[in-house]
Length: 89
Image (cartoon, rainbow, N blue to C red):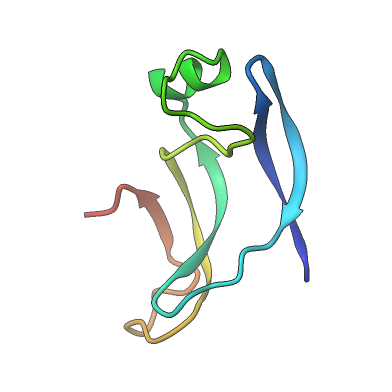
């Protein structure tokens, strides 16, 4: 299985870039190669252990943009390599 790099919060105030297994895609899922990220208040609270439902280790982030590089299942033509941002409307 190939690996990818991700920001992982191992425990409060212990955050870094680590290699992690590439996820196995389920039907209808896609893999986006992230190019740019945003950091929100929730991410900061997670980093400092101030989010009551967080379990560690975790990969933070839900504000990013990148290119769809792989998908399992059918998508309309032309979406692979299209630039995506999340949330996407």
